[in-house]
Image (tube, rainbow, N blue to C red; front, top):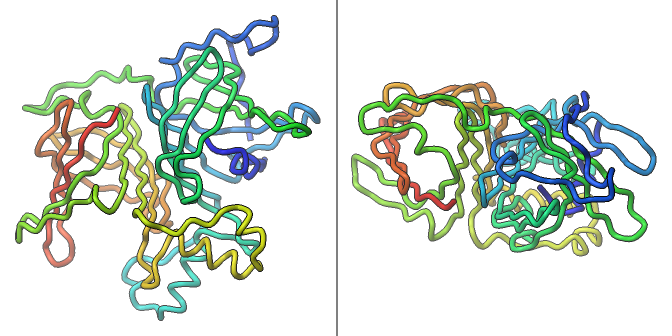
Length: 339
């Protein structure tokens, strides 16, 4: 779910999904696409160049998740082999070493991304999917969009074709479903109905439960929390990040290109101004139980679990408490539904 410039980055190289439905165009008619079947979270498995027949396996080199509700999408990926220090070790590094480690987490030697996160709105017109970006690791893409042609979708597999400009080959991206299509049975737990959590949420505020201090997050940050019955993705960006267009990047030296992209993720104190992550979860005893994180901008967090007590959950609002920090601080986070 990206602009064409991002789609080309996914030409890596695993196992293709085998569709059980008819591909678009085989009989000269547009595919009959059931939009509801796209709801959920998908992993990109392969990319095929339909002109040359070359197939590359994305899943062997990169973990890529695309997450759809009826109106919104999020998209997070990371290359294999990224490394990062624990928070305590990172805090003891010099500012220069922190900068170098952050750079290596996100960018290769040519200044190309090793991690990505974005999200926006989408719609379906026949078999053509249109979308816009609301959140993106690349500030220039916010409010931009694109088109993709859905080739097929069924209960376990989904593929789309890029809509290329003249002279470009059509690429087919195949996906496998990761969740259960919303069919996982849930049991109400007191005032909590786990089914109410499914959808896309925006973080509105946080509150220090000890001091009462409130941060109106929505004023300075766009933060989305996207949930199916088994999986979640989380993407946020600070407002006001500098926009650097592809044309401007192309005119920079490799070192300046790395510096420009680094500044889109971290400020001059090596603190994040963009974040993305994803994983699995369950609801137990009115707790949001984080299963192992699968994707994270910080490699340290991959595989880490946790519990967050839910204090309110209904169709309009979701409120939870964070685990205590080292100093004992507990934060209450409030979300509003946006799908």
